[in-house]
Length: 370
Ligand code: ADP
Image (tube, rainbow, N blue to C red):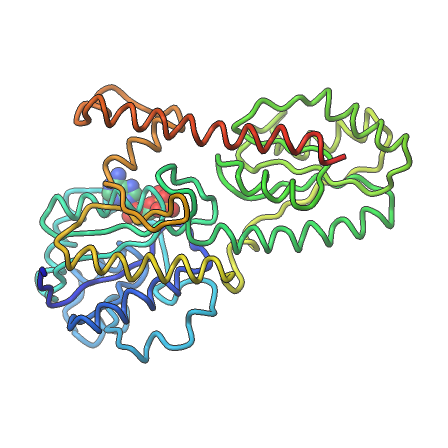
């Protein structure tokens, strides 16, 4: 078993419900194994900020908060992140990394567990490459980390979106309106797709699948002709703007112009990043947090915690990042150079599996949601 004096934990990038459950699990597991834990405040900015401060008390207050069993009490139920989050471009620079390494050395931080999305994992792999073993935990509502079927926050955000869309349906029904709801999710349409299916949307537009606008508008007109009053159309936030306005706003206008149905546009945005984490997120975050510490103790690092086929697993961070780029069609020359042909085949299979899963759900939604 590898011995660490102290491990650091941070949350970075977009916040997500369940991050606190992961912070609690990491802290308590690490303490139970005889390690100290420090919460790095504001993501990588906390490491860098501590480098510019001499007063130990200020460092404790603003950047590096010692965590004990009690300081993580009663947070498993809370949304947001007690360690705060931020974007820190300086961390990507050579000077930023030098500061971070100095802070780790001066504060005996031997390893880091970083909760966030792919940007956060890039930071974690940089740290590992500079001698600080690091592990990533996927915390993002978008569920856009291809290596894992589930990210912490997705389930809670989805449940919040459901409640809001259900509420929109009440008013749509009262006024015989169509409401186009744009759901947050960046370039990933999973939140929109799942929410659309579960709320009975008449049509769902997501970035991953070409949207047949004509068919959707005809469907809406025909459903209205059959007597349906309220209707919900869902679209993903990552769809390209049309005529300088959000995709959903353009869609709402077109529905109104072409069908005569009173149509409104509604944005379901940051609110779904807040709120209490769901059972699933609390459980996943706890399991991932405990396993992340176990990995470090086994001498493993540079991995991201994943859930695949309902089991907690680990995937090499570099593999996960390249896989993500492959899935998002963002591969650049040389990105796959370090991987064997078997690994590249695994990545392709994984991309196909995910595409197929989304396509199958999408097709199903078209027949069911009428
Ligand atoms: P997310 O983790 O949700 O994808 P970001 O992409 O904003 O969010 O990344 C969070 C933080 O991770 C950034 O503000 C930066 O500090 C760090 N980071 C992002 N990309 C890199 C990179 N290429 N190298 C090192 N650190 C990075």
